[in-house]
Length: 186
Image (cartoon, rainbow, N blue to C red; front, side, top):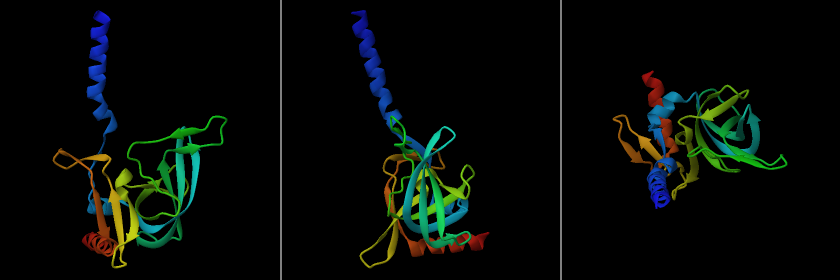
């Protein structure tokens, strides 16, 4: 009987802990925060994905062919270091994932807020983890819109409250204006 009670108690504790384990919480960043944090902001298309090891971390290097540089020095390509990946060059393939990490897919059009990533020469990391990555699509009028899905993320606001992330969109033109205003304020 004592073992049954212990087992039931363990199952109850595990069941109560599961939601906390599945939820990833990040400090909420506005577009203004991302603009300030980023050293480079670009739009472009993913033309290459390469898993590689940096020390004991498996990462994926995404090569982005830049179509427009919104902040920073104009470049034709950037290498973005994404946490996680799949190494199939081992006798037993290894995969590493990080909850709510930014993901970039082959041929995806993206808008990226980037910070320097010192572990890779000329490499960048996505600012704000997944918050600094948007997918670029055209709306019904043919205008470029950057969309973001943070629904798998809990966001902590400046007052300490936590809300569930959501899906949002911003026009590239509106973002250009925010960047311009941010540069003028400095």
